[in-house]
Image (tube, rainbow, N blue to C red):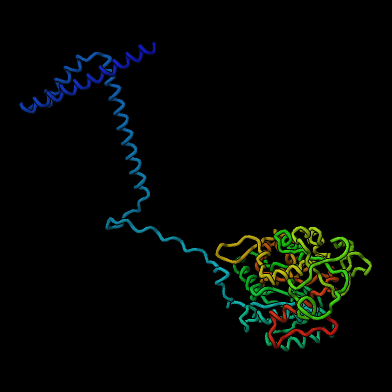
Length: 491
């Protein structure tokens, strides 16, 4: 049956083709004859009508369908061309009086931008003032070298440094009075009642930017001040910008998991060789000179979370107490494997967790920092979002509590929000006000700064870390005429 239909279709197609050809030939012949006698159209018309009347009905229907199809195609083509013409007319600018279209409007100017950190210069339209809440001469002696190095007179960003007196100890105040005399950009601030809220109120003015630095900061890298200033200018919506703090419960867990913390445990008995050198003594700070940990017994040191928060010291017989005063922490063999046996394996992302309470975690992060400084690998601390053209790593703390041991803030943002609702200025500046004002706290992770201890970590003073930070500062930061004196009772 299908073969019959195919044969019939083939026959119809051949007959249709012959019809079209014969019709075409007849019209061509008629036109040729008409051209000879001067009535072309009439003759062709009569010939066509005669041929059409003689055409079978089924052929007529085929021709009609073919003609209709051609007409539809031509109509659609015309519509498309017309539509394109209308679109072009709509987007073409109206011509001016001379018939020439005007030029397109200029693009809006780009928003103001801050240059990359590598090109960032000290701003000159406002002052940048260091603000120190003073109370601990031992660590201030080390901090003094870093502050002087960052003064504008030495090519730094600090126009001056204010020491807000936060102690009533006469001996400490006398030390500060002597320190103020060493530089004309150092100034002393006093106020009637001791307290952080009062210190803020009596120390700042609206138009200046303040770099608040705790008096127990024992290291910050050469660009730390510039980095926090840069980020504060670049991110004006932020309430404050904090440095990437070494020994902080908010950053310690991150440093551990980013590989910046290394395997150390304390020596349990004094070394047999007490001679001064690279591994021991007033000039020792390099981790590479330390002997490997090789103690008897289990490779482990306990931490305790039972100690009160008021600064109490562990009893000597407590397993988590320091083994002896002035002890060192030594690197472990197979450090990647054995780091899980060190105190930092107990680290938590918790503002009141082990990183805040444990002196052992503090000791391990400080020894790790000194190793990273010696190996020139501070990049291990870098994380957060960063522009491809800038050495800036930004971490938004998400309105969680953050230590403010080293931070940049505008004086206006402090004064506009005084008095604080709480005596805890850290909570107010890192949680209360950011939530209230919907302004984030940012951490510039490329600004590395070391905070020596919290009140809960007093036992870290029983290590030799203060000696090591002093030795590093004397060798790498302090000028020859500003060397830190070695305490008589210290190594």
